[in-house]
Image (cartoon, rainbow, N blue to C red; front, side, top):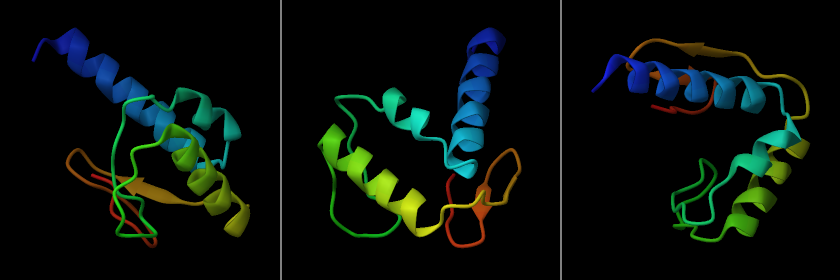
Length: 84
């Protein structure tokens, strides 16, 4: 991978983690229309952007304060979840 592309991906990842850890609702504006994935709180595959926003806001409401996270080059963990 080209170093500039790798640097940009890392920059976007770091911004995402910072917004998520800070419980920043602006994060939801970055959600793609065509993303699918499993939420940390469930086992159902989610395809709908509005559902991702709902799940994220519910998560933020359940744990409203800033969360601590620890990242390394291959793995990012919070106290309850594995991200990478």
